Image (tube, rainbow, N blue to C red):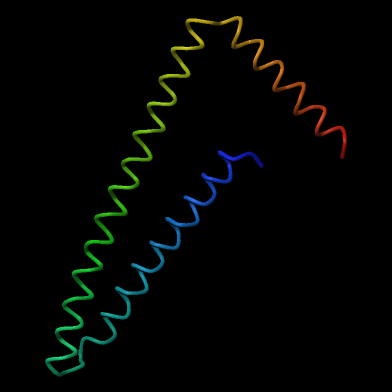
Length: 105
């Protein structure tokens, strides 16, 4: 697994974990709606605010990742169109490497 795959996998794990935390927190807030007391109400309000911030930040991160991915795709597309034979050569070299790695197993 190369560095980019590890980064992508880590990002996906982080996003999945953050979504899970948000969902679990929402369920907890729903289940504790009957609790009374000013201290609990203040804590609940603070938690809801933090949860809203986390949702916003998660959305912002997803937008940033999508934007960077589109930029990388456009850059690759321009390179391939400007240098088609080099792109074919790179693709062939990668294919040979993958074939060699697969034949070792």
